[in-house]
Image (cartoon, rainbow, N blue to C red; front, side):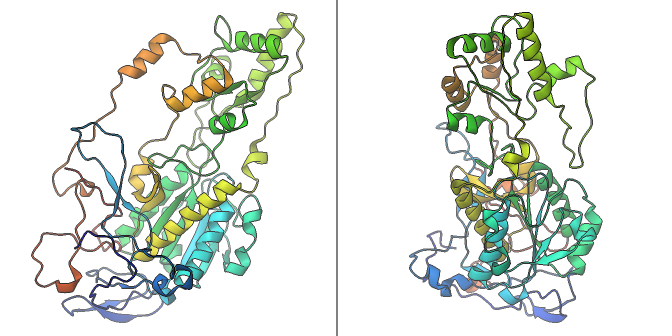
Length: 497
């Protein structure tokens, strides 16, 4: 296929095939005209190359755009700063509208669910998915699943329309409700199948994305033609690969406010007493300025608290480690320290939690959430599945679930961003020299080129030349559509040489 960008005026000679309808039984044909019976949401036969013109080409809002379709071969590099002779590395499929879509608008039955803790921006994502499906693709069947994952089998659903979601971005929380846990894979997929849903949008953090990955694998095992798209939400900004999620705080809030004197995060161990410790810095700051503000991220100082009380190895319903309330503990330790020093202080401890989590998103997050939602809709309509959408080096891409659940994103305390924070607050690093040297000696693992059919991310997914399928003799993979029985049609393009 020509690698030049596809413009709105470009055309491809594409055979027309009837798309899957989850509510009716009918017959479609493959490229060799073999009839394939389809019944409800079960489909075990050969996947037909069903594609349709993208409705966006007739959308007045896009009529002034010179090029609004993304080339199917466009990719986004995971690493953009590389050594001269390093391998090309991993690339992901670029997000955006395709010239051809997999679904006809009237056949789409979508659902949206929000899981895990609250975060500013949830309602904005819900709104933009609904409005994007309605206004860009003419999809009118969208359900909201109430109460997180367990809502698939234990709660009611809410029909979502642009009118219903029109003003929800001005409100905090999520109109669908949310919860941790409740992940019963079999019941969830049964519900998706019984309701005839063929597009599932899951909004949540790292635990939610892990759950989405399990659901995706079960959908694939059953051979269901259901798109599963993840939208990353985490107030911890701990989802890997993507540049950022929406709603994150602590380090960036400290940098933005310029009023913070000390920021404590889990990635940067600190100690309380002795030279260079937190108590010494607090005393020094109070003597110089008469006041100070300490920001403590969730999870910071857990190792200090575990020395005083019994270690907590329990997990919440989402599988995350339950964190001890170190804020109250360290507040009391600070009071006790200065009481011994006979130095009067007036300490106020504020736990903002849901004052931060449950507020409406700001202007920047509203824009970002819109881009995430629209990218997810474009990918789902094109037939991509099993992905989380997010920016990679400033470009939105479709990232396989396994890539975003294999590790957690953490602040690198030997990186420039943490150094900027230290410069802003003038706080000590609380690091020993040996800790810094140890981090510097750890080499960044190189991406190795991989050969073989057992690793689909190691090579570019090739597409059929639609104008003349019968005469194309190139070795290739089928067009990127949906899962088909036991075959896995990847959601990314990862080129390695």
